[in-house]
Image (tube, rainbow, N blue to C red; front, side, top):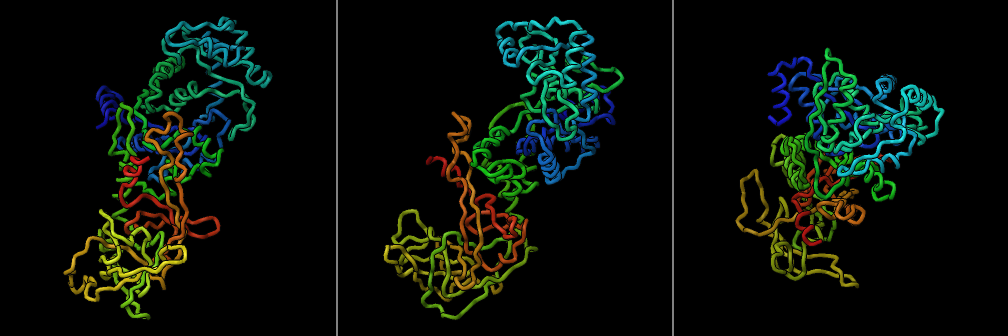
Length: 551
């Protein structure tokens, strides 16, 4: 059990009714969910399953700036993709009237006041944790004055930025969150649900705990950066708490930080606005939608969350661990195919000109249920340009002049000479093949001759061109924010190529997953015009660590 489960178990042992346990997942609808949210989603929804308790999906829509229905729909889609279902959807805006009425009650108790200073001046008066804060000149306004001004704020009679409602707590607290925090501000903005009904909007801090209380959430789970806000969360609850009802308990856990990426919505918005990425679901950023487009499976993502666990200690998880788990799952569920990314022609001189052999190949050696397929083999083939060197070099075990290699599921060949164009570039590699070296699994004929390397290939007469997108990490450094994420953007994070595929890929449909042998795992996506593309999900091996050392 993780430490949160132990807390809940202890609460039950101390008399908390198990039937009143309730959780919520409260995203803000101002951007797409990212991989860090998966941790919170799994935690809340899996605890709901464990205790047979309801889980509410609540949208904390307290700021009309940047919020939209588009983000709400994407959040719902992401949760369903991960395999979870909510019991009820609610919105913070459902409680705007109730929150307003509670704010009036705080004013009447002399625990809130209208401050007519700018937010910048308020910030300056708060000072630092090592200094004494300065009380606002308006802190001692009368209750009637505050009620009158708050009424004017609500009815749109005061200008945006002219005043705010603040809680009256302690300007000398070492916790900056307790130094008379803002509860309401004037925003003359249209809300995606309440439209123009309101021109004052509650802050997140004022709204969050009260919504937990309204919905009778028993355990309010949030990331560790909210730990120093817990005293404020509890102070607000103290003002409205009815002993006959459940009082929510805030518990913090460490957020998920991954290397070579950012998850800040503000920074992702910067990338979009500056056309570094086109959208929130770009496969190079770790939004759930981006990961889904890249071909990450929900099972591998959830497995990743289970492996790293729930703790209170912040750290950075290397992204290679996530990629390892994705690769591990895809290896079990993907059909193996042969695709040449950067082709060079290979001609087998002693093979008959018009002969075509149909070689039977297993679709996935991990699982016989995937069956087999037949791949055409002919005199002229394409192999990867990087799989050939004219002159052999140390540590290069692939094809060279005078050297033998194995063609995947076919014959051993030996390179004899090359033909070059006027620029001195190799256009053709001429080989001979060993007729007796073909591997026939059904007849149990094994290779007697051993070679060090096996190359994939496609028939030049039968290849099928496909559009492929290759991805690398968007940021060059393990921690992109040092010194500034804008300076660490990888200029070579995306590459579009046309690959040569075996004919089997003509059957590919949206959502299919393939292993391009010796290259990596790819996911089929359909473009708006109906054409299909192949997005690289993850390389066949962890190449990034090796590349990163040379940067």
